[in-house]
Length: 234
View 1 (cartoon, rainbow, N blue to C red):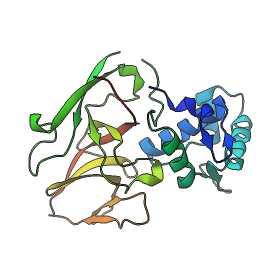
View 2: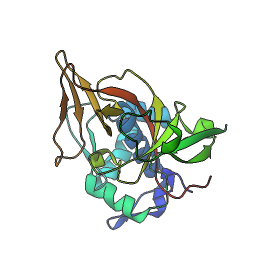
View 3: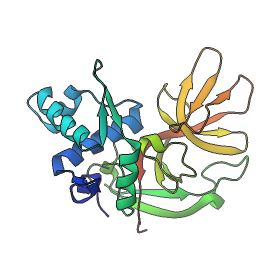
């Protein structure tokens, strides 16, 4: 099992990423999944120990040149992941971690498959198997893994069949990626609450937002705190 840093050995178009570029790409993707926004140059520099944000900028320009990201001028968080580049990476690395699950205690996480209507998400009949990880691999301790169904979140690299690490929660901030229950269905979407309703937003233009009006069946099951792709051992 490899981390996202192993992208230096994987093709992106005709170019390959250096180890540092792969590390920055993983950092960008993780920030988008966990916070809803890419990091600033200063945040990248602080995280990776660069002396100034200018060093981060040079690496970002190299990633943009290789077609992995797009840089948007005029904003400190003007970084966009290229969906086609992500798909190329994912196709070439089907047995890897998608996010850099950063270091190493021991935590046992049940894998939840399909959830029966109206029953608790961690009901025993939903648990397919249990996997063990070093607890410090995650910034926040997850409570379970949820198997992703469909491609509605592909824009942030969450693909059909991926395992989403989820921390149980009943509240979320706007922009966070959540696991929500809508009547009989459990779904993974980006959360947004307005004064009048809740919207569950996809990261795929083929999917329309889900609008939840007051009084409609809705329950927040948890927050996404990591993403895993690949063959796991129990």
